[in-house]
Image (cartoon, rainbow, N blue to C red; front, side, top):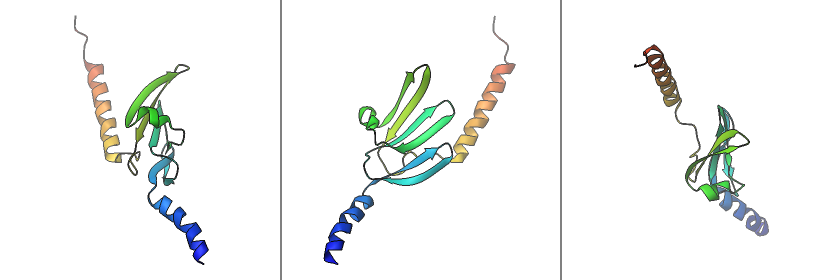
Length: 116
């Protein structure tokens, strides 16, 4: 029994102190424990969003924050953070209010006449 405890205890200890990130595509995201990652990663390209634990060490080069790059004419942004659940979507209230504000700004811009 003692031997079993010695084998299981490090696994429990490791997962208790491991980073927690959200993983998934689009809105289908679940919280997961990242045993081998120091960062949570969010990749965005157009309207596509993918979230994961950074097990590729891409974030070691970026550190905290975001970096935008273009690969084969496709622009994407990688955002990295190192706190539990830091790549969780912000509240849906903010997203809705941003959409409303963008819609209003677009209407205002469309109704304005160009200056001569």
